Length: 514
Image 1 (tube, rainbow, N blue to C red):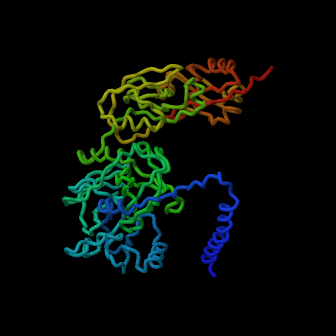
Image 2: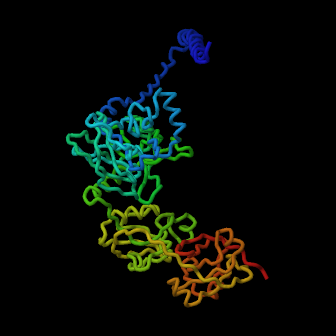
Image 3: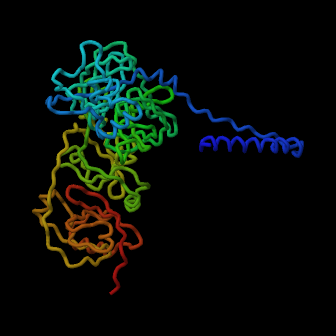
């Protein structure tokens, strides 16, 4: 008897054996006043069939090609997949060669559903100079042919092909790409298309059922289901991702995440994986964010964002406690670009930005999204925390430009032999010419560290700008302050290293008794 039949038989036998006993106990021995057992309602799992029928026609397969020498042997694999492993997978479980490889029943394409239309043969040129370079998914935004997908799906493509569920294939025009949000818009020449219904990602609830439809491993029109695992996952400057446990694999990128109302609430974009395949965690771009980007791409072909030219970091609980903040929130300014909007507004390294135009900045990643959504040239108000009090500063938002990298190396000064004060830091004055080069008005140079400072990560060459709310102007003043700090309380030390400035919480040690 097989294991399966044995388990089935055992369960049935146990049920039959218990039934007479249960019946007897209920009829012969139970008191008349004993209440009847309460029936436990059954759990009905959702039926996705109607939902898939409704949304499926709006989902498309996207494949891209690049022009290469005819001598190259490109196999059209989805990015990141191993040729041998995937070929064996298709041979064993589907009985066919892998799509996009010689002998495939859909020759010439890079994925299932890639074949050319019946008019005029393969989309590849006769000399095989056009070869498949990637495969992904997308969905129809409007009846007149706009299609949304991921930027990385169409990245570096010479030609983009969009295949509908009715097997019609179109060569698409790239309208625009935004790499920061990984959103792209393409356009096909078609009308009366089945456009998807756009939902509201702000109404997404953790635990609700969702579907993903796409082309994992080139298998077009594949449906997977799961639940929303979390919201607001900060894995990028402008993307508070929706986390799900829906199976998403290479080729699903760009496809829609669908709620039970049949609305798209996100674009399947990333997975957490150590193998390249699905491991239980996937991420989707919220559709509200994607639609804001799409509107600009359709109107201008690019996305314009505001910026204030600061580098920021998180505010830890230790920093918040040591600076008197009611709770750990906001964005800690670590550096300010000279001549930028923040510099002109008077924002300084060490400031903590609490609000932007009256809206709370809960975490550091909130600020770039708020500023980025502001039209350049707009006047805004920054509420910040500095030296124990909040203040409002007016600021004019500038347009974001390509990132600039500028580094200044501090001149080396001879170290002191020890750092035996309560903070474990030995410092020296910074020469005037060096202060000018570093654009500093105050601060001292760290020459040596030990004890608490070493454990907190201080390094020789760091510049200490402030202890608590007190600006440090000289080594003599620094030494005087360290003699009076309370060893029972954390001290917030504002430190500059290179171009970055941040508060470092430090627990002083008890002073040495002489």
